[in-house]
Length: 465
Ligand code: CO
Image 1 (tube, rainbow, N blue to C red):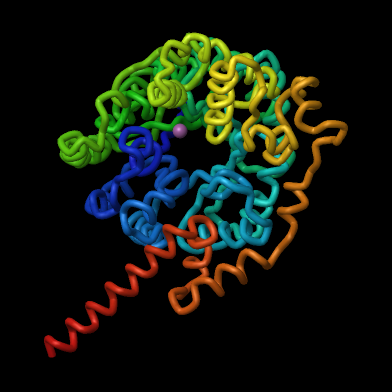
Image 2: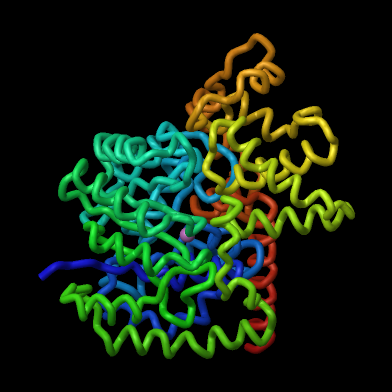
């Protein structure tokens, strides 16, 4: 019997997409023992924005959350999303920090590490891969992930080359990450057939979003073309900017005679559990109805929905909404000038802001943002295609783009010692140090709060005696 497995994303990407990652651990602790029996390929539950959100908004220690997930999901593979050399932050960390972060992730309970780089510059995921292999247990899976985008240089052949490279690097599985939900059924068919031919029986995973309304059609074609694993979310947390629904895909696949290995009763029980959770966040405004709807604009303008709403907000602030059409038309031009980067964080913001600036100033690249300059200097990695020559010359002069970033990553020791010193007695574990390196201000506040809370509790205990 043909087999397609499902990854459940409700604990990470679904809640990140629909409610800005504000779902506290306590809200779902009681359903974990059931989820453990559902038969998912894996549960995506950590990494992405959850780490930041735990420290910044929820007053949770992300490492403690992971240990609790591990304790309550002993039989299921726990999955995280990692931004390569950026880990879960927005800058490039030194190699020893990347290695330690992965060692601790595995130690605290992660099995599947899905690793990507926004530019698909695989130098940025090498260290993370090596560390995953170094600290791997028998359940560890190193998943190489490609940021999917469309452009004249992003051909099927190019993606096949990337997949071959990921295979040669030593990844265990490969994931296509369609973060904007713009992969059409037609593209999925050609891409997946081509990739499966090239990589043989290596597990291929498709991650997409319902944002533009194509995801179910795209998954259907992907399944017909040989995909092994698809990412889905419990139905009440599916659709809109989230993933397609777990129970719906289970039902449809069963009629095709495709085995998902899922337990129908349990996946329905999981969804029943999350219904009132969702309602609570609709009632308090945390879930915006806009994120639950379909928005096909990304297909027309070739920009992700989030980027569009950002631009509208910026132009409205500057009382310049009359420039909206011009700015929109400028985006693909800026993207082409910059060598067609995938429009994913942080590139989407950089391209969007530069397009708005070009239009408002009335002269292209008269003002160039610091970030775009650094990108042109090569600090984010290699662009998919060469950068426009005139633009490059304007920023670099006669200099060449340099690999200063790659060199910088090789420096070791400093970030650790600095963090340990700064934390002083607040620090109790290597995990605390890693949290601080990734999110210094948020972690400092979190650790101070933790200490104050414990002191209060201690006083209370003495008084009660
Ligand atoms: Co996603």
